[in-house]
Length: 397
Length: 221
Image 1 (cartoon, chains in turn cyan, blue):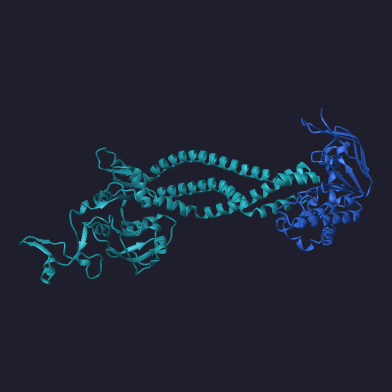
Image 2 (tube, chains in turn purple, cyan; image 1 turned 90 degrees about the horizontal axis):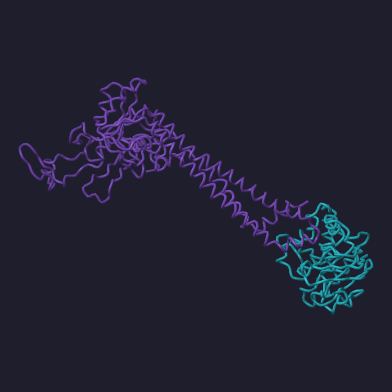
């Protein structure tokens, strides 16, 4: 019997209506699965990165901001600590200390100021070019290189923090020294520079002509005042916005070197005992610094996500039921519109069961195609969930 | 061919009652049923087809006593032995003319759609003058062409009886005669009896016999 044929002809005749139904049902099937895949990938990303980061030291404040900023380079800004925190860890001999300063961006990509130890610690390898050698050098993640079509020899310019801050520092043009091999982690989306370079971006360090020489060469306003002990340079004195072989010697830093800012210190103790001792040093409530185990913070976050997921499941289920009812209504209304057709075939001698079979065949075809569409969509989403989760984690905040 | 005896029928809760003491139609006869609207002409066709079951009396078509058959048997009888031609053509809008002609074979297990049936459908369409229109959907056909498709559908199953309910009611005067001639010609070729309800008195001379339905209708008290 040709009920499948008739159902196929009906659906083909009402192509757009059928398509809308297929897409609606496919969405009903895909959305909950996609959400679960995305949340699962986010959990994996969070857990993996946290497990690979033993301890983080930072100024007291939100532990979540500290972890997210240090692990995912998000825009959550924990209160700054000083580089002295890193020196203290080194001096203790209890862990390798890797300072991180994640505050600035270049074209939306986070600039991560750190030391060469970070690359060893994360197992990052250079795919093209070389590593960080000079002040001002940048080594970029694989995704940054792909997104901005950058390669060694190109340059990238730091973005000003506030366009309307007239007293702010000039953007720094940084040569791309190397490109990292892809890792599937937030490191792919970051621009790595020496931590001193981030201090230059912040304006703590800078380079310019020698004021008296500039004044002697006719640069008006280069020197505002001159005493035997001191020279006061004017705003007219040109500050270099790029560190080159020629001007690198003119770069210098102002203020107490121990007070230069970091956003966190990544501490990697050689054994559990050293880690426990190190953690003990930050237990005092009046201690300005805190030490966190990223895994604990992430587990707390995951517990919250689990609660949200349960609420989300209820919401998705409710929406799915509403959508299913709407689809059922669409089928019912279509059946009402086909009353004369049904009456005709009933008169011709068709059994009621055949009419039911005809409608069932249509529903089965629609459901079948929807499931195929949903399956393919889910497969595609499944392939991109790790990237999507990474993007979600890197852009939150 | 058709024999009704002491048939009585009333719609539930309705004021209408049909009583047919006796009605006979011989095999191969072409009979017109006339009468005012609401006199029960279509009800008669539905009783003969087994769509409706009389409250009392018997309806016999050929060897089968339709009024005594169960629901499933009446459906099987209907699709195998009776061809229908409706005033509104009863074509399925999403099927081509060819699929409409073949439609009875796709809605029942009692008929088998094979190559021979397909060939007969093409031959019927050829004789009905719509062979070049078979790929079109009903919307792309004229009223006359639609009724030709409906006649092909009615006769493809080789029915012994064709029931036509105002089959020319929606056609223009020039087409009416041609369509009725086609119906009679094809029915004769298939040796089928024709029982047709019509309001069109101009067409009555083409029939072998005319039954005036006013004789059967009774108002409820």
